[in-house]
Image 1 (cartoon, rainbow, N blue to C red):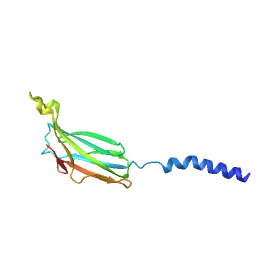
Image 2 (cartoon, one colour; image 1 turned 180 degrees about the vertical axis):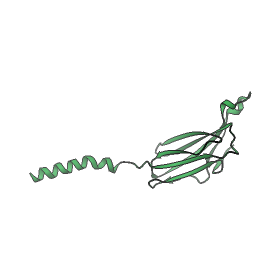
Image 3 (spheres, rainbow, N blue to C red; image 1 turned 120 degrees about the vertical axis):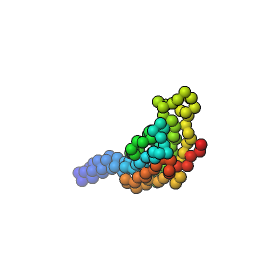
Image 4 (tube, helix red, strand yellow; image 1 turned 45 degrees about the horizontal axis):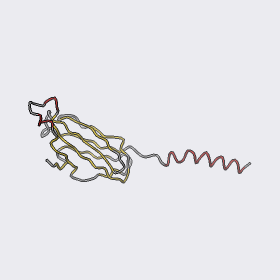
Amino acid sequence: MLNKLLVTGFTIVSLFVPHYALAQDDSCEVQVAVASPPIGLDQSVAFNVTNDNGLSKSIIMNGGDRPRIIGKLTCSPLPYNISATAYFTPQYEGLSGIRNQPIGECVLKAGPVVLNGSNNSVAVVFPNDFICNH
């Protein structure tokens, strides 16, 4: 009887423990902002956060927008790459179709960022914290 009770107890515990043990901490975040000027109200910036696990999150901000957060990022020792692309907003496009082309992809000056602790975060400002290839 005692053996059955122990086996049943261990079975119940083993059903629930892996769910908590394998749960990933997704409390990390990246705060992004656009410096206006030099980014005008007729420009937008697309921010991208990616890692080698296949995570990819993006947000688009206009010149003059308040800072925003790319949240629910998995806290892990795997580094995140933060990039940004500035472009002219289509509704302000003049007669020339050239204005809506991307200005250039930019990468974070600091390089990849590791958010490996619970509630870790980083804040970046475009274009100040980025290196752009025009």
